[in-house]
Structures are given as C-alpha cells and as structure tokens.
Image (cartoon, rainbow, N blue to C red; front, side, top):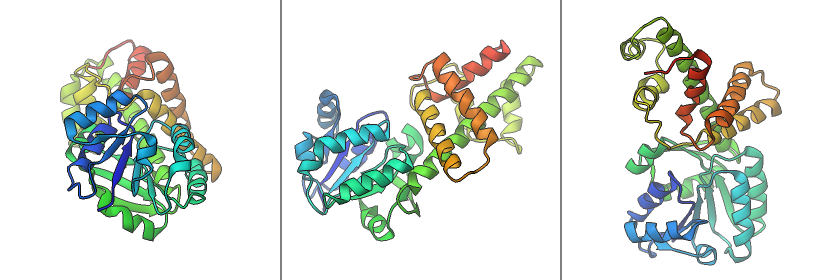
Length: 293
C-alpha cells in the first residue's frame, strides 16, 4: 500500500484522517499535518497517526488536503513543493475554486505530481461514519487509481476534468443556501401566523416542500437553538461566491443564487462567519422579529 498523508485537521479533517488511519498501515501510519501542530500531535495520540512535518509529508505517495480555501492550499504547496517526489498524487478535498484547480494542477505537474480536486459532501457526521460523497475532477485514469485510497468515502463520483469537482461542490452548497433560506422564510411566515413549527415541518417533510434543510438541519439545529459549529457560515458564503463565479464565467442567468448569495454574505457579517451555516436563519429571524422555535 502507498504511504498516505492528510493535511488539515479541522472539523472534517479529523474524522477523515482517522478513517485513513483505520486502513491497514502496510507502509506505516497515516501522516498528519496541521498549521497548529498540537492538533496533529493530538490526532496521533488518539488515532495512531503520525504527526509529521511538511518535509516528511512530501515522502507520501498520496497527499490529501482539506483546508478552508484554495489560497490556503497554494500556501502549503509553496512550502512543500521543493520536497515533493515524482509520481505523488495530490488529492484536494478543500471546497476550492475551479480556477485554482487548473493552476494548482499545472504547478504540481511541473514537479511530477498529479493533482485531483476532490471536495466532499456529507458533513461531520458523514466523515465520522466514513460515508462521505466525493466528487472528483481530473483525468479518468488518475481518478480510478486513487479510488482505493478514499477510505472516508461511501460514494465516489467522477464528475469531469480538472476543476469539475470544485464546480459541483460550489453549486451544491449554493443550493444548500437557497433551500435553507427559503425554508427559513417559509417558517417565519408560519410562525407569524401562529402555526406550530414542529407540526408544520411534519407536514412539509411528508410533502413536496421538503428538503434536507427542512428534514434535518432546521429541526436539529435551529428549532433547538443549538446551531452546533460544524460548517461555518463564512465558508458557505465563500462557496456560493464560487458558484456565482462559475455562473458568470459561462454567462448563466442565476438571479436566485445571486440574491441568496448577497443574503448569505450579509448573514456572515451580521451573525458572524464562524457561526454554523444554519445560523444564517438568525438574519431571517431579525428581519421578521420572531425566533424559529
């Protein structure tokens, strides 16, 4: 088996790297790195990985990254590229920008390293269960070769060439924002009419208005007032911005995405970018003068 490394131990990265560590470590334990090295050391102590320097990481055959933005990935590439070995595969699970994917692939190919964009969907729960969906962008033969290493995934879909993975992820998250905002507005109107929101959701979730937002996110995070910090509101605003860049580049007409993107950015500023993405509905609540409970 090929030595594997994982860079970026955030909310998603910790369980994803742990899933890699559970595979048979024939070539030694999974290498882990994080900007704050104490997180890598804690991961090694809990999951049996090895907290590594970037120079050590460069010796791996497959390098996974899961960082906040493509700019963060660029920074890491700049720190590690002189140590990379020819034949390595770099698999970026960041929710990145398609333009960055093309630039990063070109930069790494100059070092003899292949690059695949491979963002994931399924949230922290999916990462912990090893049931994430991975949307892969890149040449088909390279995608096929990396499949056995995706221990954190339940569904692996090759969606197109370089940048396609990031494109699908951005549009997916834009739709998440649209569904979440629309459901929040609808529930605010119901609350203003004195309707019990729990009962209303029972009907909606058995009817044509249902979505993941109405079935899972709002009941578990909004009505409970918990808003657990899993996927940051600022990151959702970043992703819908990427989706709008994609639409602009191919001259698509996306007025609904544009409006929700503006609302999402406003929510990130007013509620806080580090808050859970479901906290965008706090702005809906402010606009309507009523909490969703």
